[in-house]
Image (cartoon, rainbow, N blue to C red; front, side, top):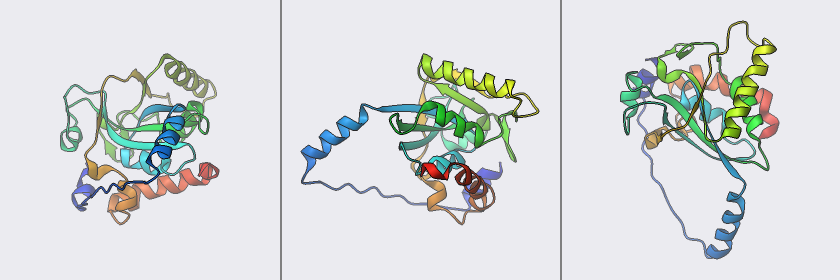
Length: 211
């Protein structure tokens, strides 16, 4: 796979640092108040580096975690998923503040950021792991996703049928740590230069006001 080959060209080391805040009690209260408005969306639209890079920094985004969903193998690795035999899709699990960003707005951005008419691929990234899929986590999300997909179909936004799957989320497996913020940390990676960057630039032109 093109992306997997490009990944092998770059090695990234991560270190996590934690700091203590003297205002821990007040900070904890603030976090508890804000988390009351959080919801989670799990979206597959090809390479999860692309999805994360596009949505990163948007107003209302609390966190984005690249990962795998929809397969049968427990605790899959990136290499196993790239081989295309696990049934998983590369996804981004997005935690967002519903007072600043709605699920409907996320759906609009989601369908903009990729071509949902391609079967098990996005461009030169070919395989079931790159399929277009929304893993809903509530009946409301399912209804909104199906309704939005139907509207796009009726409006004939694309000449070809929309192949996006809308499925219940069973298990989400976070990807290995080096995938987190991959585009930001590896801007010179050939795949990031040739594939991710153009998508991000196109996305920001349309949704830049949400930064």
